[in-house]
Length: 437
Image (tube, one colour):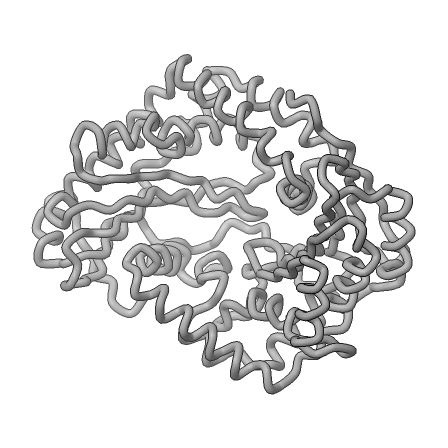
C-alpha cells in the first residue's frame, strides 16, 4: 500500500449536501468539485446531451456576473473552471491556489446555485456544439463508437453519446436545460469534494457558510440501476463506408455494474485479455502474431447500471473477417481456460504499482474521491484498494472469466467498405446492414 493515503472527512450539511474534505499538504493548491449523481443517463428521451449542455451552461454566466466577468475573475487567479456531464453524474470543478480558497469556493457556489441561463447563449452554444459534432463524425473511430452504442443499447439510457448528436442538438431547448438543472441539481443527490492545502476546520466553516442552506431543486429522477430490458441480439452488423480503406471494428456484450463483487477479479482478467497493452492476449494474437492491427483494447465500462463491455480495433478491410473471428476465439480461450498465475501476478503488479499515481496531485486525488462517493465504495476504499487487488486468487479470476465473458453473445459492428468486408464476413454468419443508426 502507498505510504501516503490521506484521510477523507465526511460531513452532511443542514441542506442535505454531502461534504468530503481531504487535507493535502504537498502543493499549495486546492481542487473543488461539485457533483450531482445524475448524468447523461437521465437525459430526456431524444434529447441526448442535456446533462452535458446544462453543465456547460452553468459556466456561461450567473445571476450576478456575465460570462466575461466570471472568466476574468477566475483567470486573474490562475484558476480553471470546468463543467461536464458524464454517465451517472454531472460535474462542476474549480481549482486554483490554496490561498484563494475562500474566493474559489464562493465562485463555485455562485456558478452552481445561481446560473443565469441566458436565452442569447443557447444559439452560440449550439453553434459550437454543432461544429464539434460534425468534426467528430468525420472520424471513423468516433462514428464507430457512437454507432455501436446506439445499435447495442436499442434506445436504453446508455445508448447515446454524452455530448449528444446532431438530431438531439435541434431538439434540446433552453427549457429542457433549465428543467434538468431544476430537477437534478439537488442537495439530495449532490456531493462537494474539497482537496488541497487548506485546514479542514476552515474548509468546513467556509462550506457551511456558502453551501449549508442550499437544497437545490428536485425531486431528482430515480437513479438508473436497471439492466436494459431489450438489447441488440448477437450477430454481425455492417455499416457501409465505401471511402474507407480499413475497417473500424467493435465487439461487445453487456458488462457489470460497479457495485458487483466480481469487480476486482474481472478487472484483472480484462487486463490480461485486452487492457494490458502489448502484454494482453488480444494484442499478442491480433497484432504480434497476425499483423492485422496497430492497436486493440478491451474495456469493461463499470457504471451504476451494467455498462457495456467493448473490444475496439481497426484493420485493413481485407482482414476484417479474420480479425472478427480471432477476437472471438481469444475471448473464448480466456473464458474457458482462465489466465495463468504469471499473468495474474503481472496484472496485480500493474494496478498496485500505478495506484499511487492517482494520488499525487489534488486533482487526481479528487477524482478518486469522486469515484468512491459516486459508487458508494466507502471512505476507506483507497486504503483497501491494493489489498483487494492482491487478494484476487487464480480461482477467483477463472470464475470471473467463466461467468462474465460471453463470446457467444458478442454484438459485432464493422464500419468499413462493404464490397471488401461483406463476402468474408458472411462466411462467419449472417451480416445485417446498419443504415440510419
